[in-house]
Length: 92
Image (tube, rainbow, N blue to C red; front, side, top):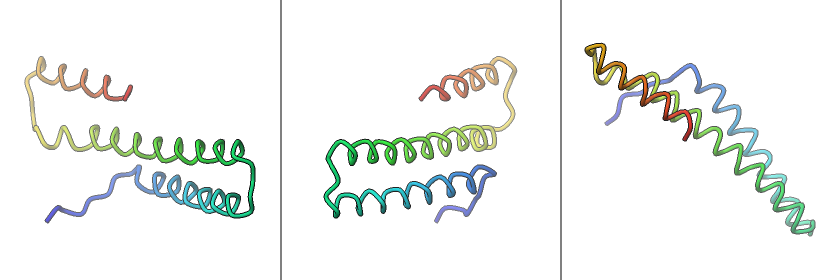
């Protein structure tokens, strides 16, 4: 069983996901009321982007917060490599 943990970014991520959830519900209503496909596609794209951004923040926060704790103290050269990995991961 995994340990329960919470990062400072989690409340913001939850807020983003709840906003996306509400937006998705409105897209479903739009679809049920027969809105044009272009409008639906635009709105679905916005929902998708919101979820992708929430995932990105979660992964980046996990890397920043958990990687150092998992690997412990390193030599400066090794720490430099970890710092470079963290910097590169921001582009994912």
